Image (cartoon, rainbow, N blue to C red; front, side, top):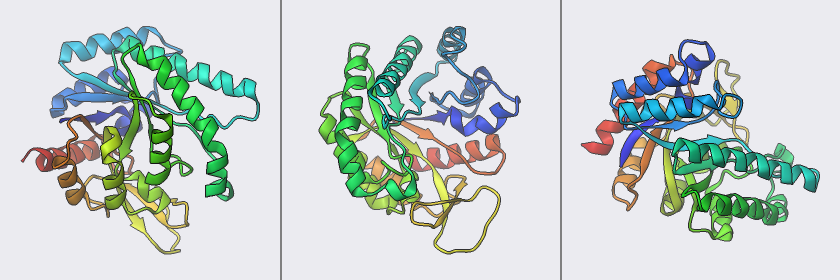
Length: 286
């Protein structure tokens, strides 16, 4: 396994203008990371294509892998024309991933309002979601890219729904970006959910949350789960996930790919991301 960082973990500093993506690469190398996942927030490869070569060259000079390229997408469109436009937009990002030399790419697939996140809606939407994922995976195959969906965005967040899509897409180069924390957004037990989806993981995100099952009003980084509980991003090992048990499960599995720190809490991002990295490194490799 190779331990690294998501650029999303440094979004706080990128957004403030304190770092750019090239600075992030330097920083990841300095803390001992082996790879960087690219999440284009605070930078844009489509609008600034020259950045593709700059990032690829910088990573190569530092000896860092560019592990994964992660973008948003929503294939639940009102018209067939809009659906085709979204397919084309995601394919454009597949081209970017190929130019970067990235071999893994995550794209989201769907969002729905809270009252529409039912199983009946999901079953109705499933054929269109499967079609979209198949077309993106097929487009990426000749470029040597494995595409994936993440347990992300409430609607396709539970382990069973992710599995259903991966199984029905039925492509060798389509799997899941497995985020150990995001299952809590749908109030699913992270330990059992990770166990469910670990065999179909292409990339693993290590993340932690504070989790509260009450109606107390909290401010400063808290947000609601699907079923009305509360979450706040945490430094890995500080929150309420059973991180030691999950990391031990990963170590004893057959997974041997990229492991990525993703921090999204309120603490200063460089301090928090490095603390998370150091915690994961100790547990993964000791």
